[in-house]
Image (cartoon, rainbow, N blue to C red):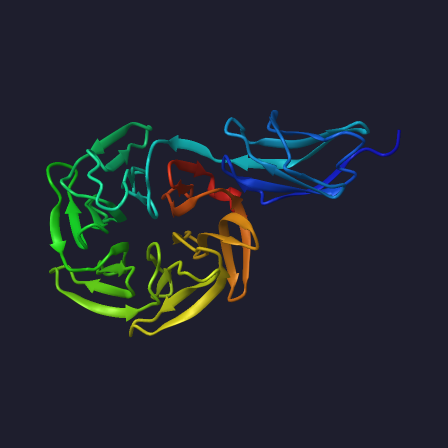
Length: 332
């Protein structure tokens, strides 16, 4: 029997169920199909060559070492960190929102115009789920203030709402187009992305004025306020690839990074690093933006729409149907 398989690296180092990771090495196939395990759970490769295995992460996989077994032997590679599912049967459209105490807000948004009985979902730090009607249709972008007030947009009626955790949500500003993305600057001024091409600035008084123009999106605007005092915007269009835009304090928007395939939610971590849920060169997941033309996949995942960082540093990632938690240290 010749030399056994060798795993040199696992890329990316973290994943969610359904995401595809690549095992790179040597002699990864033998006379038969290789057997792969992630944290002890079988995972069947979809592509197998002697130097690369493409492996979807199964739903029941746990964090742990990746192993490959061939007829020439078994090898253990580095640990793959697998995100923990916090909630399913959701319909987030963009980033979740996280409070200082770790409380998470997300949505069961529904298709446009669909009246979901309780579309706002709150997850307590101990994992309890509570749903709220709030009298709104299609809650989309979310933003939490330090006092726990939730602001959200409705892409159904183009309204920005305020919700205090009980009763009905209060309209704050209207006529915001197909209102999707939502964020706030360091002074508490809110920014609402109309996927028709305008980002609006909404003062605490409710006064609205256009802030900048971005090419219209076929899906949604996603907004994040950067540590440099600029607004960052992603907006998937009919193009195969789109950039992330940086908008300065005067409203001038320029391409900042990319290109990405269908870029969606984006967020900065405590160190000021920018992450985006997107695709690039047929890889899907969360990318770390390292420069205008440099981005590196750090989490493999399918159908991802947003992310946020909890005060303790954990990363919360939303797909179109579920919410996951990953330790921030896994995004290396």
